[in-house]
Image 1 (cartoon, rainbow over the protein chains, first blue to last red):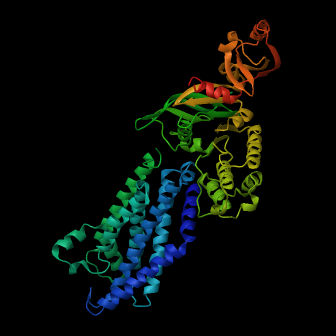
Image 2 (image 1 turned 45 degrees about the vertical axis):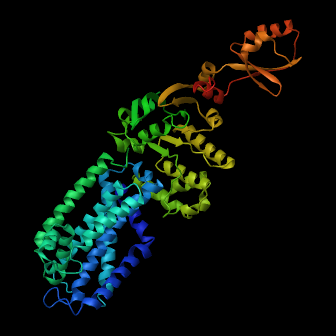
Length: 251
Length: 301
């Protein structure tokens, strides 16, 4: 337990010491998205009846920021430790793979939620989304950040160089988050792209999260919970397996 | 005496390279043990297997009876390893680094021991400095402190003095010697053979993944390298009968192999018969470097 809590605290301190870059910067980015998109689209788009586009956009941006930062936290921490070599100080002590997994994942979830809260607070200056079902909001924030934190863990374990990690991020994570209904309701899409979006787990994270704010979604929040929960469990099992066999960490 | 570390037929292959070809030996409790060998001999691989950083393909390693794979938690608590590569986490201060390392080993409130480590390694003034701000030698000493936070009974130092200046090297060795006196088992790999010779009681040599020598210092000197006798002669010419014994010349002195001290008399007799006077004579004992070169077979070249 002491091993887990120390590693968890170390991971928190790591991003907190550079919080200008790890928290303030993504909040600013989300705010810029909001200002630009709402300026251009506010008068043209109404995603849900009676919901302003700006209000609709805010939970999507908050979720996208959470997901990207949860991924960034685990993946960048691991790749930096691997490349500088200081990962040995984590590998030599008697830490179990479960402690390793939970410390990295939880710290990344904390960063994701912190950024998400920052985005919601700053953006509420522009428009106030409702808070219909806070429990759904919290559930999807935690599970969504968790899934991306684990993906970051897997990417960090797998990548040997920064450009491999950048490829993982640019060709997998960014498309998955952008093509998930952050900026639009997927019902506005042509049938083919609607089907494709239904295969994207990030879509369910955002839809479920948004349902918590407005009480309206493209699909039922229970379906979203099923998809996101299953994804979380499968990825957690996979990454724990990688850690147990020491994939790319222990030769 | 029981074994602090037992390597049993350890094999490891990296692709086409057979890094360890079945290495078998024990390090006894309380020993100051040297593991020597040229670059690429497999020393670091062996230490990585001991620390669980690398997994052996065959064979096993135990630390004070705990298997490094099956019982890794117990094994890792018993051993502290100072890695060869100079690595640090640039996000943290020296004290944070040591507190985290204590926590990973399950230790809470380890401040008193951390202070003692900092004091002994001459780092007290740098406790709150960021790791980035330290010189190479200081970082190296923080690495030593990191390996010792959990007071491991077995301490492994993989080339700990590379890049550390002479004064600090002595501070470091005095501290390690004291830990050894207190009963800690020390395993050292180094390229400075005089360090191994001065500090270690038993020595193992690895060559291309195979153990080629394992003995205490005296035994190794006896069995692997002859004494030499250094002679200055007048006239300055070595008789033909003694030429086969010549191993080198230095500053006008001939160095002859002396396989047995009793052959010295015959050697002097040969010189007398040839009418050569001995101006100066010196018998040189072998040092570890000579033994090392002999074992590694470089002399043959």
